[in-house]
Image (tube, rainbow, N blue to C red; front, side, top):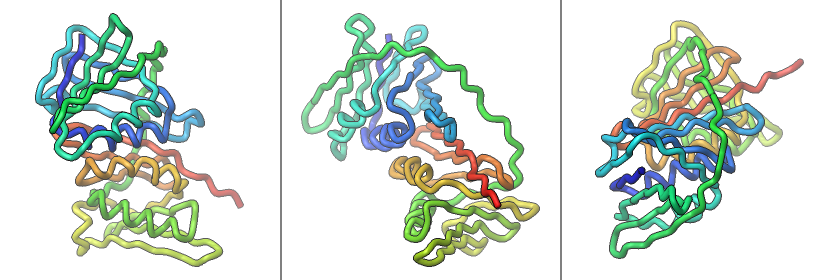
Length: 250
């Protein structure tokens, strides 16, 4: 049995939007510690690791372990019906094989979607040695990616001991967004050497749908290696995203 109440339905809307861009179906696992989902896109270019601890919920009940397989396109349609000020109640109805989603606000609105029987994938967390770390405001990173999208489908991310730099070039021109140590949007920077890697922009645009639920994002990467993005969520929740680099050939 699993039931949880979260105070802000909008947080879940942003999370589900971001997940749905990566996978069509996925498996939430509920335990006494909280709710978690780890999924990889079909091309094995990107992976999401989402976790919401029980303390993040206003109410949380879970006996044993519940595996909740859902279609994210269907879940996304429902989550977009959440209104400002709504809380969200999640109920796993194992007998009827359905996930109940209940918005509590000016009215109580109840939806349900059928559960999917999905096999659990063993997806270990990538083991990567990161050479650089930066923490920026989530909104600033989102705006930077929008600037880059004007000219290119790819973004080169560079880090020096003094700045985090995003650049792109295309037939229509060039773009450079720089976060120096003097930038209000750059909250932390740790790089002992210059590093850089290029990533497909559409994947970053997709995951940044979660920005509405996060204040900051931590970037970690190394030269021509996958990047890790950690978004902080209310109540100690975490949304982590791994993206493989684009390997440029001569």
